Amino acid sequence: MDRILVIDDDQAVLNYLNIFLLQAGTFDVTTLANSTRAYDVLKDGAYDLLILDMDMPDVTGIDILKRIHEESIDVETIVLTGVEDISLAVAAMKLGALEYLTKPVDNDRLLNLMHTALEQRRTSRNVESELTAAANLRFKEAFKEIVTQDGKMREVFSTVEKMALTDNSVLIWGESGTGKELIARAIHRISKRNGQHFVAVNAGTFANELFASEFFGHSQGAFTGATSNKRGFLEEADRGTLFLDEIGELALPIQVKLLRVLQEGEFFRLGSTKNLKVDVRIIAATNKNLHEEMKKGNFRKDLFYRLNINSAYLPPLRERKGDIPLLSYHFLRRFCQTNNKKIEKISEGVMKSLTRYDYPGNVRELMNIINSAVIVESTNELRKKSLPSYFLENAGFGDYGPTDAPLKTLEEVENDHIGRVLNYTGGNKTKAAQILGISRVSLIAKAKRQKAE
Image 1 (cartoon, helix red, strand yellow):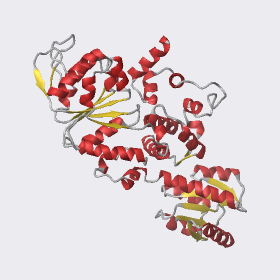
Image 2: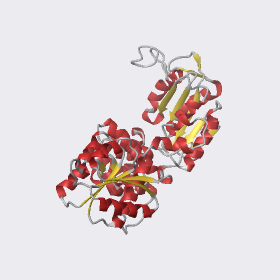
Image 3: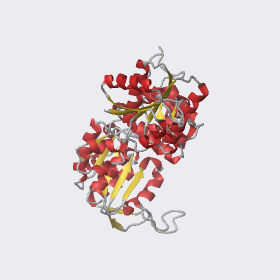
Image 4: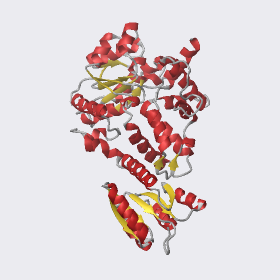
């Protein structure tokens, strides 16, 4: 049962609320008439919700709210008082009160507020432990960076555990921003190679002519500026794991060389005829449909079958919307700490908007939305006005909400979304790519395709 503390110097009010709340059947209620004892009662964090009077002798409600705020006492607060004072209400809200109600109490309003506050508290507390508490995994620590309570994701974790114990190549499918690198890191932690290097490379961030040099390394004199031998990503990952993201972006000549690494464990540095050996496990990831790419001749079938010995698919965030509140509070805490902010909650309206949005950029986009809002927000609650304008438009707040306009194709929706994000970033492609959850190279390619059309 939820633990409720009521502090009021009027014993008649305490008696009324005690009976009323106990009749609700879901609360464990404690009342306190002597406000001087409030600090001792609250300091241990034994209560989920505080219903607090403002006008009390010796220690006032504002005094108690200040102490809760200063000492970061973990309790939600609803102010209930006979004093109708706007400035007092504002002060109480700034100190973390969820709502300010005046007596006589509106029973339905109070109960609704209590249920909202307690549900929000349950959602926001112990986010990081949700996965490990519920999932039946042998290697729970390996997945500690991934915040989820979704059943599909837990099935993925269970499959990944089994694949990780082999030394086979793995292909991870999923849209940009779904957490493919986090899964790759989990595989590495579980595998027998966990004491060696994990090297992550995004193939989409390199122009094709540069990738061979970075991936395989180069010899002195291989090209202008190559003043010494250089180890590539492959050698850095020797005896460990190499994570190759956006594998579908690799040019065909590079695919041939990668296939040789997978088959023979050998390669040549750029500009060298010396055959080098390497012992590396390759985990590849793609946001493309490689079956379609093979039909178009853009991806080699033999490479695909070598990579796809084991595979895992990560569902997009829009298919696991139950994770959005968990992730939102996880990112809220992270960025509050980074930016030295004290934002304790996300408003109900904002949470509804966050939940109904489809996130083309998936978890990475949600992370950037919360980060942006935390930087702007000046109160203790994340409000609609702090959210990025492009998100508000796409979530139905602006001119782009539900209308009677003709339905668009997926490509048209993507083009519109890219345009709004670029407009929001002032044309900064690097920042826009981060928000969209794709590489800068992929964003440039999509923008060129739009112009061609």
